[in-house]
Length: 201
Image (cartoon, rainbow, N blue to C red):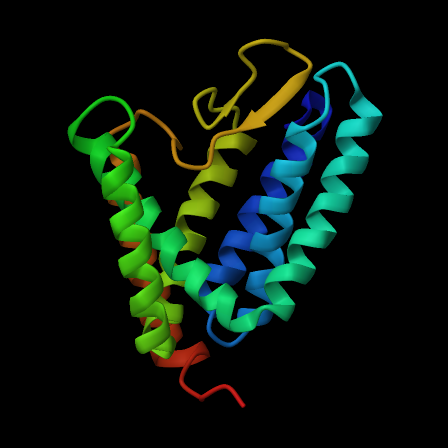
């Protein structure tokens, strides 16, 4: 969570980071890990602060973001497994939200996360391309909706001065999963055909 005044800059960061991940995730995988580590670390650390503590939220977000980025960059193989696990969990959340209301069963999320992690380790190149394409596409949609003021993607239910990011619920609009799939497939095609053709050294 961040002060409301930081909503637009954070949304633009999500949009830009998502675009990098979607269209050049394999080539710039360490940068992508740093971006998502920063987002995760900032979200977790800032959530520990009180909603009225603006300076504390910002400092916690920055420190947590840097720590999260360093952890994922230096834990490269763990990062690959986490990307696969994250993609598996995201697929369950999006699919479940498309057919039913509410959160998916915890068992389904855990199973898909484990399968995603195993798949990521076995088929690293292709899983990295697909995971960064679809993860980046989702982040772009999330950032875009937050930037234009979508109140489901970025809610402030308890305090109007606080912006809270909900990464698994971008919007209740039925077009969101379709746009996510289309953008993810486009990112996959771009990476396989252009930006991700050469193997990492």
